[in-house]
Length: 214
Image 1 (spheres, rainbow, N blue to C red):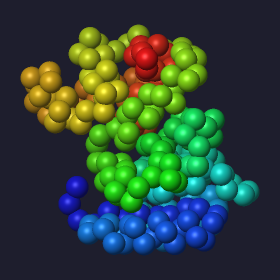
Image 2: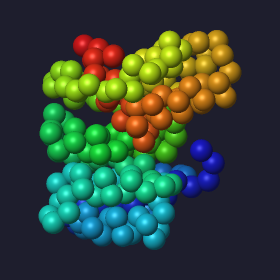
Image 3: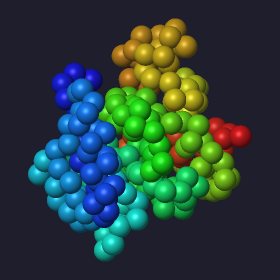
Image 4: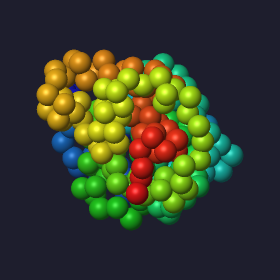
C-alpha cells in the first residue's frame, strides 16, 4: 500500500491511547489522524477524518467497540477495524469480528506486532489467522451459511486458502492462476457469503463447518 496509513485510536483510557500514539507515530509510513475516548466519538471521527485503520477498544462506555465497529463497517468505503483487547478468548472480540472487524490484537502485544497488525489490516491478507482460528474453534460450528452451498469448487479452494492467511498473490501462486482471477474469486466468495471482508468470510466458513478450525 503506497503513502501513509492513517490510524484512528479509540480507547477510553488516556494512557493506552498515549502508548499507541507513540508506537504508531514512531513508525515510518504510519500516522495518527485522531483519537476517540468512546465508540460514538470513534464513529463520528472516522466518518470525518477517513482513516485507513481504526484501533478499537472492544469495551468502552455507552457505545462499545462492537456497536461502533458495526456502524463503521456498514458504510461504503469504511476503514479497517482492528479490535484491541485485554482477553484473547473473549465473546466481545468474537462478536466484533462478526460485526466486521478485520482482526484483533492483545493490549500486551509487542510494538512490532501492533505495527504489523496495522499494515496487514490495511492490505489484503487475513490478520493473525491462527488467532482467529483459535477463537472460532473454542465455539465450534454454530450456524448454517446458505451462501456456502453456492460456492464453486475453485471459490471453495480460494476460501480455504484465505483461511490460512494467504494474500491474493500467494493464492494465485498456490493455484497457478493470475492475481486478477483470484481477486474475482475473492469478490465472488464475499458476495455469496454476504461478507464485508476476508475475516467475515473466514469466520462464516469456520462457523458453518466448511473449513475446520482444528
